[in-house]
Structures are given as C-alpha cells and as structure tokens.
Image (tube, rainbow, N blue to C red; front, side, top):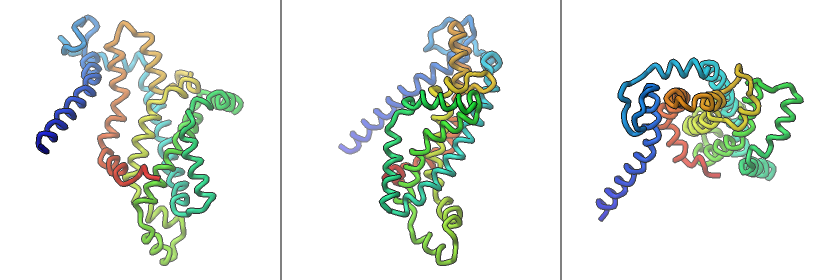
Length: 273
C-alpha cells in the first residue's frame, strides 16, 4: 500500500512539475522563432534565431535597465541583511515587553498592503526631490521588506542558535557587537540565503513602485523597460519573449546557487515566531 501511495505521489509531483514547466517551454521556443515563423506555440522553431536576443537587448535598452536593477537590488539586499539581522538580534534575545511590542508591530506592518502608502509616499518623494533616482528605489524596497526580514531573522535566532555560544563569548570579554558579528552572524547563513532570495526576487521584479518613481529611461528598471517594450512590439512576441527570458536569468541563477541554504533556512524553523 505504501509503495502504491508513493508512486501516486511521485506521478502527481511529475504532473505538477510539467504543468509549471509549460510556460517556460513556450517562452523559450517563442524567443527562438524568427519573425516569419507562424508555427504553433507548442511546436519547436522551424529555424532557430539567436538574433532575437541581441535585437531585443538593443531595442529595449536592457543594458541600462540591467545595471539599474542590479544596483537597486544589490544595495537593498545588503542593507536588508545588515539592518534586519542587527534589529532582529535583540528582539530575539531580550524578551522585554517593549521588544515584544516592537516585534508584533513589525508583524502588523507586514499585513498592510504597500500600495496603501503610495499617495503620501509619492508626495514625500516629490517634496524631497528624489524622483527618478536609484536612491529612492533602494529606500522603498528597504522599508517594504525590512519587517519580513526582521521576522525571519528573529525566528531563526530564537529557535536555532543556542545562547550558550554567546554566553561563552561574554565570559571571554567580547562585546555585544563582537558576539553578534563573530559568533551569531556566521551561523545565519541559511536564513540569510532565504532573505536574499525572497527579497532579491521581489525587488528585481518590482513594478508597482518602479513605474511611479523611476520614469526616466536612464533610471528605469527591467520591469518598466519590459512593459514599455511589450507595448511597442505586440506584433513581435519573439523579441518580447527573448527580453523576458534574459531578464529572468539572474534570479534563476541566484536561486540555483542558494537553493540548498534556502531550504535549510526554511526547514530550521526560520518562519517560527
């Protein structure tokens, strides 16, 4: 009976995996088709055209968009890891009433839809003269994902890292910051990978804030550039597919490199409060 149930689960997993792979198959085959290839989207290209990628790269100005998106994503991710881990450490270790209130406040902020703050945020950005700057994009993403980052780090520290390590370091005369950076932070690799993947994927694919604050072509991110490119090339879906495929590759590679730590971070109680 167990073998039969295991086989059924295996078959079900394969079917679900194939269903998820269908969009990628269509995306890849479409990106390789020439303009005059009118074959069905389910069929392989009659003639493989790699020129679509160079053409899409130039027409959509993906080079500039890639640089902007990389800078914004990398800067926001680094700040999230540094500030998030530093803020989570005392919240996880010092169980005072104030810390508990602050912790639950972060959880409450996670429930609020980010777009509800769009109007006052937009007015604030305009008044500060930060429109069309990468700096405002970094700050927006830092504010949006910091509560989740603190929540994940605090849960991981509380449930995974033993206090005895820190107590031993205190006996040796180490300060709190030294204990954190030399003892605690090196043990946060799994949850750091989890935070890195979650935040980077969402920041890389951010459109709702980028479309309002990054309107100039010089600071446009990939999502805004792709949206504009799609609207201008509805009759050339092969170029749009090529551009979309190139834009998704960095995050795919990042996940493949960090998936081992990502799974370990989730399975080690990182999402427990």
